[in-house]
Amino acid sequence: MSAIARQLEAEHPDNNTKLGAVVVPMREEAVGNTRIELLVLMGAAGCVLLIACANLAGLLLARGLGRRREMAVRSALGASRARLVTQMIAEGALIALAGGLLGVLLAPVGIKVLAALVPTALPATAVPAIDARVLGFALLLSVLTGVGFSIVPAWQASRVSMNDALKQGGRGGIGGAAAGTRDALVVLEVAAALVLMVGAGLMLQTVARLHAIDIGFRPGNLLTLRTTLPRTKYQDPEKRIAFYHRVVQAVRALPGVENAGYGSVLPFRSQGNTQSYRVEGRETVPRATFATDALLRVCSGDYLQTLGVRLLEGRLLQASDTDLTTPVVVINETLARVYFPKESPLGHRLAMSARQPVWRTIVGVVHDVHERGYELAMKPGVYIPFEQFKDTWALPESLAVRTTSDAASLTSAVRRVIAEADAEQPVAAVATMDEIVALDVADRRQQMTLLTAFAALALLLASLGLYGLLAYTVTQRSREIGLRMALGASAGRVVAMVVLRGVLLSTAGLVLGLSAAWLLAGAMSKILYGVAATDPGTYAAVALLLCAIAGAASWIPARRAVRIDPIVVLREE
Image (cartoon, rainbow, N blue to C red; front, side):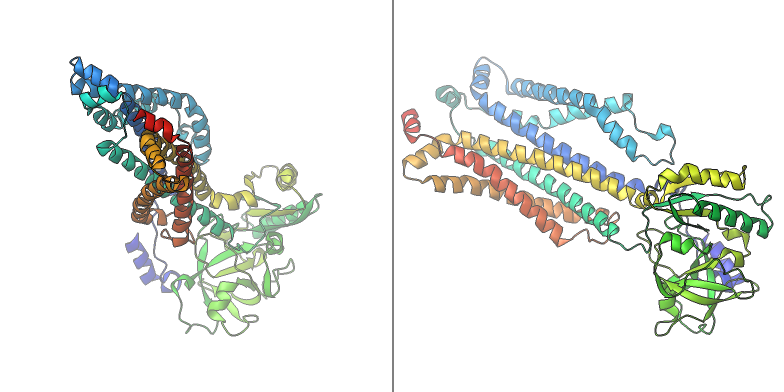
């Protein structure tokens, strides 16, 4: 395609200079470039699974250490360490499998959410469904996670001193390798939660920035549809013009209709439909890459008024712009800025590329309309009356109807008007402009929703896991805390000691999570808009939130610890 583009540029320098070629795979054309989005969402699901597994490992660790006396008795009766580890791994796998079965029962709810995310252009068979492969994957994942995250707790619990366990009856702190495992779980949970929350925060900002863009027209209360006229039936230009006029006049007469107009391409419906152009007397002006061709929109007199496009200078197109001897054109702000940076473009002329160019007088300048969607850069654009444009490749087949209330409610009435104008004329692509605009950011909104849901779930799981692990730690250190208080330590000092340990562990998790999020920024940057993947404000806000949650999760068990009666502890010792 690049070779063909270069050949066309050499053969037709006036029409094909710097146009080039772009090749888009059919899959991407149908459903968009979903690879990055799916990888990000799979990573988010993986983080949630990781946090859940860390919670499972923490519970199994606490459970195993609470069974040290039992393990010691089993060992004294001849059970090998491998036998003890195998038993605990089997128990962990059963717990994980039970959770997996419960998840499968809840999966139909998730399937309904996923089905809503499948692009409407795809067949019904593309909707995800629970089948043997999904069930097998869920079963395998449940068993593997249960076994994988049971190994370390089982190994730690089986390392029991028979003498100590039998003499102390299970009393004592959780120290050594077990304490290190517990601390590692806290760090892991905080890190995974931070990565997810950073991703959700960046997507929230992306959607907010997109919605803050001034698209150049008013999409509210705007009904749109397409009537593609058959070439054989409407080969005569006068017949086409008569059809457009008849439909527009009849639609305007409907109750609840404010205005109506025809255009060749509606905003947000196409990234192309351009043509090279020339501005009279401006051939020496250096042309930027984006200025070699202009968006060409052929429309009726009231089309721009119907869309609600803002006029900056001159006038808009009018129904009286039908005289072929005085062709006119309205240009957008970008074209005016490129060629007339310090003067008014009104009265100057431009011609769209053709063997016999028609020089059109510029009669107005309008605010830039994001014809190609939210994200693509602005291009020069021109609006030409369809009565003065004879090329059949840019027919005004898209009807826009401005209503005073709900636009969709007038669909039947507009269909009847078109049927009265031509009973055989089909109507296609019926949609409100709000729906069309929303579709342009639908993928981002879906990603934002899913990432936010994952992040909220991760935050909840991490908070519960952090609280549970710290509460268990305080329980294991109850005698130590009682002795400290008996020896004169104040309640505030004990609380500060416990909270400080929780905050230090959380800080280590934040450092790990920030590093991981920074490394993954490259993948996230491809689905962001208006915000950097390494935005320091987002990272700082998420870190502060997690610090506050970690402090709260540490403070609650710390307050419970200071209620320990030192007398009871001393009597036990």
